[in-house]
Length: 394
Image (cartoon, rainbow, N blue to C red):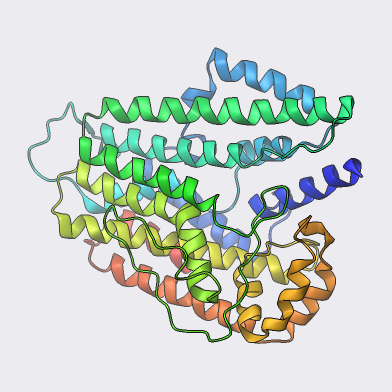
């Protein structure tokens, strides 16, 4: 039973986070080139933004312990591999640096404060690293498995992997806030703290299976056009009002789970450069819409690739199909105990026959178009062009 659980979790984690880098389709090549060109503009490969944290004794010891998990197929193995190799999607740190460069610097900063070569502030580079470390720590924490078996061998392997996931994630998180405190900017601290609140809140949206993996809420019989607000402020989002409504539920889950971090980090980096509040809001709006556009793009591409046996049950195609056919929820309920009890092949075939994929494409294009509109408020520059290329790659 648990050998099967290992295999399923491994496949699920691998499919959710990234795809292999051995072969690339034409679209993947375009995305990879866009990311590569953007990294040249900011000065170095941002997939290694947190490299200086990884090259120390503490994390070197963690890497040594992770090697002991080889053969257990704990999700942490795939997470560690994907974080090191990177994917074809841009890192959040890269986006923060490009927004910093595209926004430019207000007068009053000394050369000591600036990274003259990159055209940004040292504090903005630190914020980009903090953003990437928080995102990485969240991914590591999500590698934790609930343990229900007291078999000594199975329990030991799972518990060992869980311990490494928690400690490594905590290490990166604590270091990120230590660096953040060094910026001596209370407003930026508040923004990043709100990101952390949103990440945690995303993990408590129910329903979930026994492994705490998310399931969609029961679809409402009467679907209303509920819009999740941009929430340019500190007020928490009202979750109960959107669950069961396909578009609103999808937007809420992924805003809290990832888009909030990018949005508020883009806002914070413009705040560090002393831009007016209205301009800071543009950074927030771009980060929010960019993150959601990439999420919709990834889910659509992942769902249509039949090589991927499993797909997320809270992905846009699934939620839109539930809106189209509420009776489909009976298939979702089969995963209440374990999401792998669902018949993914049957579900994929049924979803592809309905309007869900077309609705997902429309959702993606909405966020893409909004991202492009926001960028037009920035001055023409190579950084803005790089951001436009990343959006167009969708």
